[in-house]
Image (cartoon, rainbow, N blue to C red; front, side, top):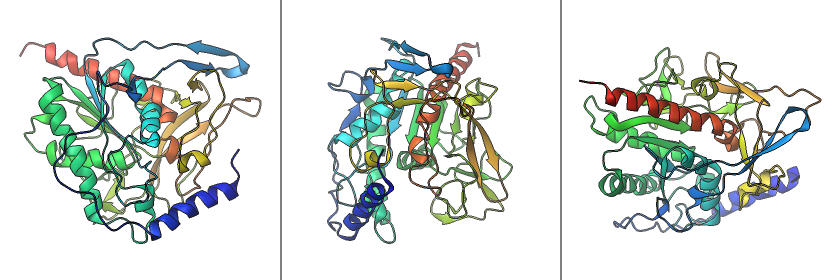
Length: 384
């Protein structure tokens, strides 16, 4: 286990990097999309081995192999979170080890239900986010330009009229929220017609209080039923109520404009119940390989002979809210006699379970998008 001192040094190093960032920005000239994941791409991290060891209550284990269909009926467009350890404000378009690793950890299991596309983009790096005052707006704009260019290329070259799911976490969720705002959130949006759902995890999606829309999006509502489509799934996970200085679950802005928490709230949708688990049972899947770079210094991956570990019947969830906060409460159902490995709020209470937002509910999210896709396909077959 990595000590608190090691963790502190790791993030202190990131802060030092932020103080000496290169001031030159990457060129904004048009360039071909660099694909991280795409059907037919050699060394595609989204086509990884999905074999998992399920750690069952009582100490039993079971190895499960998962099939990837040859012709999935829909697509998934994935944008990864902040992982780049490059010392500049914006990352390059290199397929760095951290970028490959996060795609395996978050996106590869969706290949059991959809074709997965994911662009490399010049994201704001860990160092860029740690600089005093945060990254400049131009850095966010550069990152988004890559995502939007990749989306256009996907539609032009690969989509062929297929329905799709958008999947993003943290910075990736904010990129996709911006994409939704610009290209989907109009009364008559052609792109919204093929939207199965948007999983915008750990991105503080804002809705009008008491409503499923308003705030960030006007025409794309929150998902409230498992058979609903054209909607948004969003949450940030915590073991308890977020503190007052939490980075997630508290309304501060809608698209970088100040927002009144009395009128707006951060959206929380329950991935377990949406996926059909009425008792709130989460289906976590965790990688057994340590994550490269600074983020790997604060995690302790579970041990197994397979690339994945599943933890069924260990955690459940429920959306919770106060007058100013909303979050996904994660409940440990194992009890003191359950010796299975646990997850922790590795970055402290202000971050909650942010690093594991996706993986704690990864099995649920895969089940959910398959369920939503079936509902979408059912409406397309009905006579008009």
